[in-house]
Image (cartoon, rainbow, N blue to C red; front, side, top):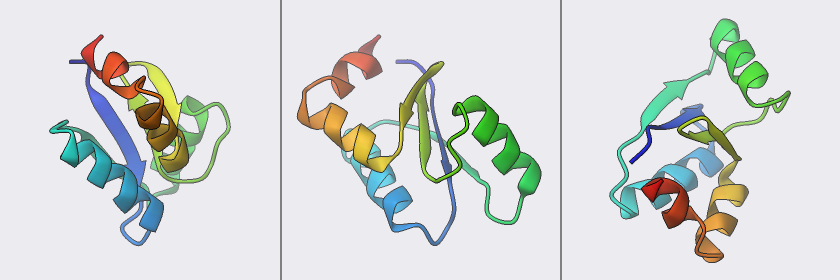
Length: 85
């Protein structure tokens, strides 16, 4: 399974929803809290192609996007394929 990284803030409900989905699937992930850390948020924004909102989720080097994006991938049956790659 490729490494999963999720950029979050502690107060973000979308972050919690995305983490809940990953946890439900038994996926271990590295969480990077960017709240109050401009250098980490800047690195996230650069890695995410300019997207500044959280969460930003990466599976390996593939940028999945945010919470809506990962839930849509799961609904289409594509998330498990990415996780298995």
